[in-house]
Image (tube, rainbow, N blue to C red; front, top):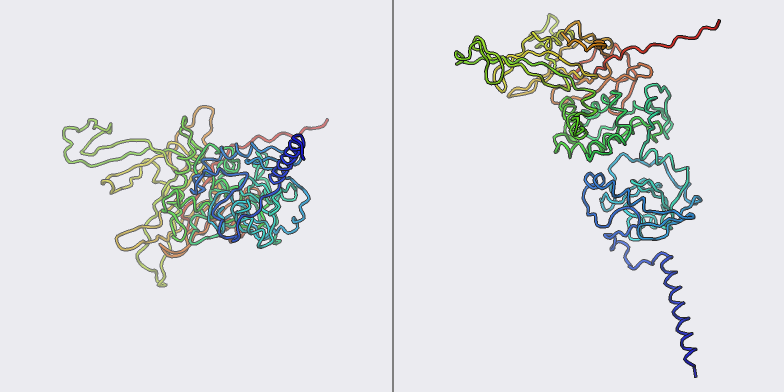
Amino acid sequence: MKTKRQDVENSEEQHSKKQKLIERSSLSPPQLGFDNALLPLATYDDDDDEDDERDGKKVEENDLNNRQEEEEDDEEEEYINGFGKGRHNRMIEIRRDCPYLDTVNRQVLDFDFEKFCSVSLSNLNVYACLVCGKYFQGRGQKSHAYTHSLEAGHHVYINLRTEKVYCLPDGYEINDPSLDDIRHVLNPRFSRDQVLQLDRNRQWSRALDGSDYLPGMVGLNNIKETDFVNVTIQSLMRVTPLRNFFLIPENYMHSKSVLVHRFGELTRKIWHARNFKGQVSPHEFLQAVMKASKKRFRIGAQSDPVEFMSWLLNTLHKDLKNPKTKSSIIHQCFQGELEVVKEIHVKNADAQSNGRNADGGSTANNIVADTSRMPFLMLGLDLPPPPLFKDVMEKNIIPQVPLFNILKKFDGESITEVVRPRIARMRYRVTRLPQYLILHMRRFTKNNFFVEKNPTLVNFPVKNLELKDYIPLPMPKEEEKLRSKYDLIANIVHDGKPGEGSYRVFVQRKSEELWYEMQDLHVAETLPQMVALSEAYMQIYEQQQPAQPQPQPMQLE
């Protein structure tokens, strides 16, 4: 018979065996608890990145609003002796010797499109397969990425937010420097020193297919009638302070606007020197534009780049402005000021003759004159009407007008008549010049029946546009020089019929002062004379900076 002591020893031995079994089961991955691999894919028990309580809202709202919380989740992960503890305290092995790294195919990787799972269409916790380039959600054993690794035999995946690389289905993290180039393409990075050197760089970059491209001069995909967006983006990429601001994400991390962050990502991709291909697709930026503009500007519908430029600059300013100073990088670059004199004819002004009206304007001869100051981001120039008759050769005469003639609208004396909201005579005078001057020629006029395009050619200088010779300018403050000379840096052109046609843009590359013609994916060097022969629709001029004193060379005695 067994004694009581033997019974106690046997029970303790059984208890210790159970304990070891529990510990082993907790360290080894649990077995799949289902027969059909397609049924339970609605649940995701991923272990490291996203909060399970988050619902399936759009990434435009969630990813930016909860960025700080997600970074705190990542910081909770500890790495001890080659292992890390995830959010569920599960041990994650970190290895450098992954046998599947040679299956990574950089040719198929494209991070320009929206980060959505190709199966569930969810934007939460998305991984990219580095073998086929497809996006899948999660990496737990019930996730789409895990299933794809078993079905297709593709084993290397990168988290599109944390940039960590994992091997599935084994589940360990890969820490190998050979994957850094993929991380740089996924999220391009610039140091402040690199940003300052961009306009001096003359070096070409080489894509994976062997083609050469210039950073900052890459083509943009035309998704569907989105050339009006492409020419606007290419023009703004020449505005140095704006570009430098968006190349450093820390400058706008406080903003919760998706449009701001998407514009920053697009800027970094355009100027990145280590891209896998010599072109960029603005797909994510266009999605942010559609949402922010409430589909006023959308894929598949041609729009006006002047309207889009105005909307984009005002929206970026609203999302970036400092609550104390009410200023932003947009206003620092583009905002000037006009003095506007508005004259309105009134009928019963006998009592107010030679006096003051309620708005502070002066009245005389039944005319109320009101003077005000108003800021501007761009100036609209009126073209003279085209001739109605053909010449002796039965061809339409294409008139030409100097830019200085149509700039006289802002000399403070020329009168512009307006009919809305009421008939008035307007006079404009520039009281403050911006660092970057945007001009747009009003080529399109609408009536009740159709839209008409004015084909008048505007003759303009590519360099040294001197404004003080043609319009009165404010006197500078003491110890300041009047900076009224401008150089052209971007010129947007419309080709074709009104309401149809396409847009292209001429831009200057500062490092060599060469001009390039850009139309979607087409990028080609051109002559400055060709820029001046085009039907200019919108232009950006850069204010010339005062010449820096050159250091004198030392003379040896």
